[in-house]
Length: 350
Image 1: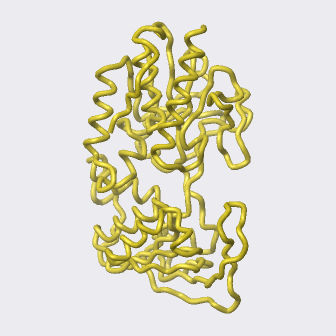
Image 2: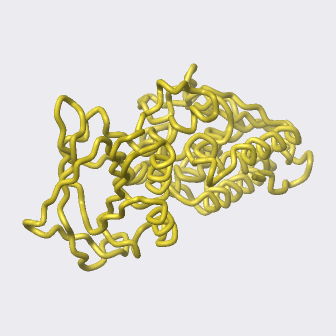
Image 3: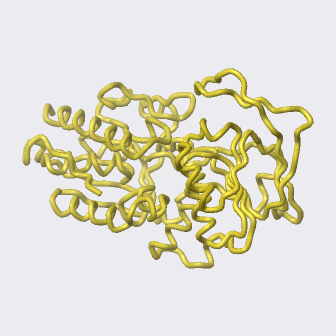
């Protein structure tokens, strides 16, 4: 996977220091552009090596590990880029997000802004959206990102088998129909789950991951149940025993533009399951609270930027999922490149 997408000129930004927070697709492509333009770039990330979710959450069957690592090696070999791993940049209000297991040190966001000529925030979306139903606190209810992160971290050699959720011989319910749900269901099958349900409140035609991906899973053995919403996780002794659902019908389009699922009274039913994996989406995780250092966030936690991807503080930019919300890799790469070019123009005028 390539991250270096051209530069302004080899030395135009010589002497300029840039901090990039997050080493996912947006951060890496920005680092490549600015580094080959002559800037000195420090990439801060809570993970032990660059790659973000590309490396630490997406199964290698979709994105090859060596492809990501090879692209990163090429990027670092040809540019003045330094990686500061296992380091989380935080604001006055520190929150614990998924993937924080590897953090060894903490840097204050205000100190980062003071040390560099420009800063790019590309910290992604590392917090899972809750289901918001009773029983979500049971021990074998897992968030998609945390589940996938642990599985992939073990594959990469960073976690032992004892730290991975065992699904072998168990019945798994995956809630949602986006790409994280696809990955959680397919990984559960590979890990030896006896049965995998995929539960979605709309139909296969509205599934965010696409009908083709869902159909492929069904052929692999996943049991697809649509027009159903979980209303309670049933358990005993702190462990999941089942999930109660209510059937839905589709109504008029909601704010997402898709038909709104409307529960059907008296249509409740239950499934016996051992594990529930919550895959209903992730929330952006900026390193700041709204208004800190003059940087504004939207109501849903995204960093507000202009067309140049500059935030409401001069010299601080943002790109990728922390601006867009969870998105496709190509969109994050494009966003990171837009931000990098804008930063290059800004730095060249200092």
